[in-house]
Structures are given as C-alpha cells and as structure tokens.
Length: 174
Image 1: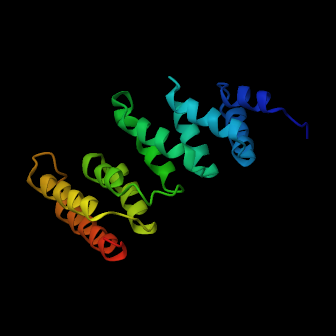
Image 2 (image 1 turned 30 degrees about the vertical axis):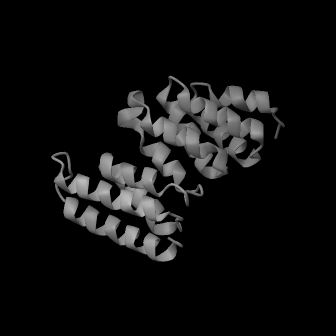
C-alpha cells in the first residue's frame, strides 16, 4: 500500500468520489493529530453537506474535546437547521460533563433524532452542575411543558429529562 501524505488524504477527503472520500476519512480519523482535528473542525463550516457530516463523524471517532465548541456552534447555526443530527451524534464521544444546559436545550428544542442523541449523552455521561444550572434546567423543562412547540409524546421526554436532572442534582456538590 502506498503511504499518502496528510495533504493527499485531505484532498481525497474533499473529493467527490465517495469511496475515495470514505477511505480518506477513515485514515485521517486514525491519525488524530492537531492538524487533522483542525481540518475536520474547519470543515464543519464547509458548504458541502457531505463534507460537513463526514467531518462530524470523523470528530466523533477522534473524540478530541477541542471539537465541542465548534460542534455546538454548528448545531446552533440556522443554516444547518435541518442537518444537525450528525453534529449532536458526534458530541456523544466527547466529554460533555459541563454542558448540561446546552445538551438539555438540544433535547428540548430539536427534532427527534437530536433529542435521541441528546438523551444518550445525558444517560451515558456524568455531569457536573451548579445549583443555579439545576434550577435553570428545571425552568427550561417547565417552559417547554407550557410551550406550543412541544413534541406529541412530550410527557415521555419530560419524564426522562426530569429523571436525568434529578440524578445530576443528586451527584453534584450543589
């Protein structure tokens, strides 16, 4: 097998040939160097949705916490509104322990796919939260219950989220 440079792999990741793109993604994600992490973070803003989604997937594999803020920014970006599932999915492998409010907002204000990914994060990670954050979380949940934009089976969602907030409150040194 021919050894390829980082420059070549990055070019192949950006190419339109799906198989070449996917092989480059796999090889780059195994490297995990800062320049590779930066490359994928920068491509979260790429105009090509395929490149954005693949970059999120690569960041999920790499699991470098420097990607958390850019992933959250991509989730909040209005131009990505219909395409945020991959970004939330990528967050699952990152340490979100200090992000209880942003993760809760994703669970409350996004589509079913994002809710599912956010719930997985809440279920599988241990969070640190202040008493102020716990109160804010409960307020967000109450506001959601009273909103007109809640999902049809919102009671199940609320029950799950309330349970997670209860556990976080119990675990934290509030």
